[in-house]
Image 1: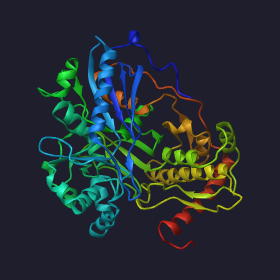
Image 2 (image 1 turned 60 degrees about the horizontal axis):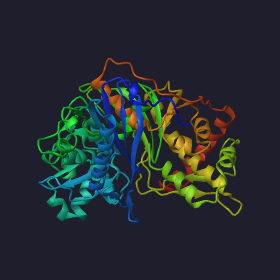
Image 3 (image 1 turned 60 degrees about the vertical axis):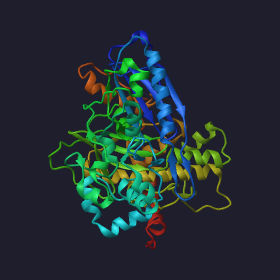
Image 4 (image 1 turned 45 degrees about the vertical axis):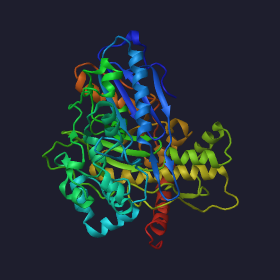
Amino acid sequence: MASKTFAIGLVRVTPPLVLALDVGSTASRGSLFDATARPIRPRSKTLHAFTTAADGTSIIDPDQVVDEVTGLITELVDLAGDLPIAGVALDTFASSLVGVDASGAAITPCFNYNDNRCADEVAGLRAEVDEDEIQARTGCRFHASYLPARLRWLARDLPQQWQAVARWMSLGEYVQLRLLGDTAAGTSTAAWSGLLNRRTGQWDDRVLALSGLGEAKLSPVADPDQGLRPAPGSIARRLWPGLRKAHWFPPIGDGYAATRGVGAGSGSLVISLSTSGAMRLLVDDPIGGAGLELPGGLWSYRVDAEHSLVGGAVNDVGRATAWLMRELNLPDEDTVAAQLHEPPSRITPLVLPFFTGERSTGWVGTARATLHRVDFSTSALELYRGVLEGIVWSFQRITDQLLLLKPDITGARVGGRVASEAPGLLTVLADGLTLGLTPVTIKRSTLQGNAYIALDVLAPDVPRAEVQTGEPLRPDPVNAKFYDARQLLLDELYAAVVSGQPVG
């Protein structure tokens, strides 16, 4: 349950204030934070949804998001009253892509991370280039969620739009361009695109050439300490004169914000359970250093000149549980939770939970969910548990590769709405991963992390409030042994169905 005491009212603030914004898969959200990083009540939210289609389309209207963010800023500026706001920080889902014309107006929709219409281009890139070399340069494999394949697909399938676009940018960059008249790509946003050189922190010439793109069609890359200011005549100057001198932070990826938001420091493992999911380690990785040698199933995203995020992602967590709740005739929440606290069973179906494709560790964007060992006796509860066990198996594959980099991992902090929305999930997760878990009980850890990152620049010497956590979970050795064997069965199913290899 989320903490009711972490947030504060305006009378208790320690200046300066930060206005933090998060554009997620289901909503745009905003909150004020004081210098200790405590959220100020109330928060603001505007719901939205991606437009999807059976051909793999996943888009959103970028100008709709601009309007949402404009409304949120106005509400929060009004809430602050006479209290000065020193910074405005924005994160968005990653990756995203918007094409604009010479005037800065969007002439494409915003293509989202799970739009997989460029899957054929992924196969073409893998046939054309040494993927290990590209991962060494950018920290990213070839995948439909990254921009090299998407840009090639756009040039091939939408040539008129491709020719008309003056600049390509992330959704966050576009929002800032419309509001400020200026923009930059935050380092973490640029890294998530698959176009950034992780050694230099700048756009990678080799990958830009593969993508058919010149650097002039991209924004400059900026670390969090490199702020923007509203240009004369901009919307921001007209609507919010009090923000004229604020530090407008370059937009960052939501994964970086979520990692910082659960209170994790360098070397701490974080699990995020939201619409999608991820496991991440924030690591020391100074530009010009040797860098990490990555296992093939992981990514590494530079977030600033000194640090990178290493880990893996799972496309479908909250998206999968939402499908289960919508389509299955499940009993009440308490009954579902009780079933998940029961010992695991061999009659639970085996599920590969790739409802919108696989990212880590196999990078098969065209993969789809597979239900195995389902018969007339399979109940809705058993199918529900099978999907959750499949999600845990996906995280286990990431854990195995992270242990190659950091063998002393024994626990993780867990954040994200699905941790509380899917009853019993954390019990299965602790047993399946054989890790101790510490649930973070605050709401909106992504907004929280956005504030932490901003305050590192604005108020580095002010002590931060610690996020509140729930009762730690420890793995049950008997259940953990069962899941070790079960995960081998899922590995065999994956090899047969996704990799096309016969089960040995």
